[in-house]
Length: 274
DNA sequence: CTGGGCTCCTGTCAGC
DNA sequence: TGCTGACAGGAGCCCA
Image (cartoon, rainbow, N blue to C red):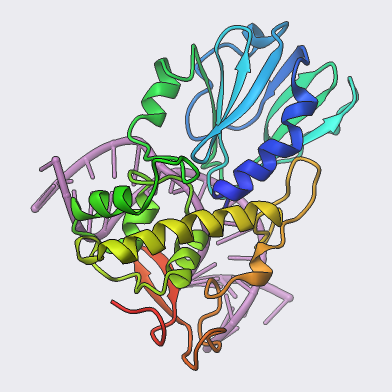
């Protein structure tokens, strides 16, 4: 579910409110993707510092180490203000970080998400999970030349190269489709066949697509909410995602759905070319 | 090393 | 109405 924009919108919606709050208790529900890696009680008494994002991961700095969080396919975080008296946990609420100022709760029906303690973001569990991630899309080093060089080292479909996250992080299934539509590139094009000028177009499209999505609060396809409970609106301006069989908004073609790497890809054969 | 496929889990929806 | 299969925003892991 959550791609970079949803994770960033979530971060922005609670980072300042939780900063400096002292943890009073921790509740762990059903197992998530990986174990927490530390006794929950050991977090009690520590204060939450800054909340940062790397790719689709959030890092909550604590006095000792921090928590690396990932929302998987169906996860979301809610922050409800108030000291005690937090709402009773539902069947899909698998992690509560209760602080003096409010409770940060992860809800995740499919449980592909994770909350993992790590001694530092660049050591231990966090370092292992973040190793191999590509550049942040808004990093100035992520430009056409970088993308072109990286794509040239691979021989996979350009869509899968974006999804992999080893070149640039953040574009998941929705935004990879949308960025390729924006750049008028056929998602099946082999990565090493993309010209330098078109790679520059694609790099720009990845940035603008993600930035625009953040501005409108992300995409709410079924259940995404930020930590205030607000829905996103990007899905309303999607050019191809979820629009199989519908008219292309840019040419007289019809949007098609194909499968790449066991995931749906949406594109317009009329204006997205190899 | 690379690319491709499988897998984790639950909910929802279309079709019969 | 009830059952079955397909599909869903991710990404680590295993195998050829």
